[in-house]
Image 1 (cartoon, helix red, strand yellow):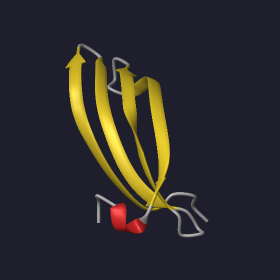
Image 2 (cartoon, rainbow, N blue to C red):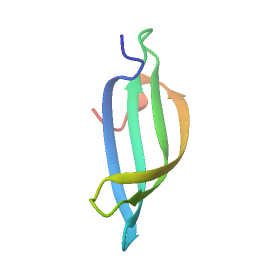
Image 3 (cartoon, helix red, strand yellow):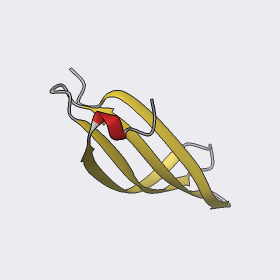
Length: 73
């Protein structure tokens, strides 16, 4: 069974140059016990000459939230 159930994601492009891209993201999910979480952070991606992801760096923070406090329904 999956750990991040009913996953909803929002990503925003911060910038890009040549073969690198930076995004900000925010998502919500709940676990099997019904506890909701909001996760947010940043990702930096680097792509190879074929457009495939070569490197990914991510910083992610997860916070427990009440279901009534969800943003993405």
